[in-house]
Length: 242
Image (cartoon, rainbow, N blue to C red; front, side, top):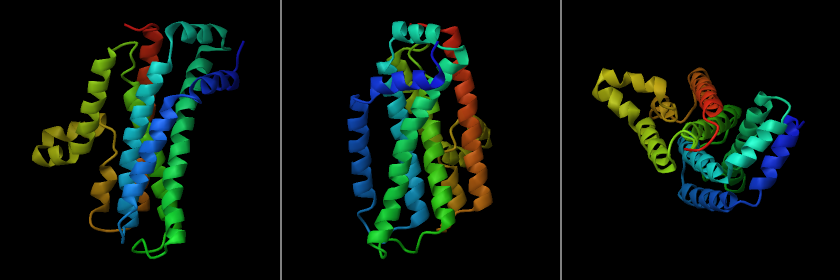
């Protein structure tokens, strides 16, 4: 019987030569090249925009990983794992690992830019900038993964799933404007990923709020955990594609 580690290694070997990496790296390089081309730049705004990019990048990665999954192979993995939770944990760890890799790249690049060109940003980086900024980037990516993974081809057609992810993501981007239009839209704060909440909290300043942004990161974590729980329940119920 295979452990979580062994299942993870099998999954990793299946995707390590996948086009997912090439497309994701090209998109990341293009984003960083454009994002950090114009000076002076504000640290907080740059990191928040990066977190939104990470959300969409990880949503794309999750949708792409769906194409790499084969029902028969997945069923064989499930039969040969130690326990059912080990199968699903290995699946989550693989996605989180990919998210972590790109989060590190996106978080370290502005620090490297600041070191090479100290005049590029309007001020120097602080520990709070690094910790909160990196946290927002990583957990925005996790929200992107879980949002896209919720619309797995096993229980919704791929085309409809992509449309649903796009619609949900657009609502996440626009929810603050909708809430200002009508209080009825406040319900979106519960069901939509909080990827834009830090922009509202930041306002016109250029410093993170440790307590405020900490709560937003916690909200992202809770959102991702709930989405993961719902997704795993659906995957257990629907074990084959439609």
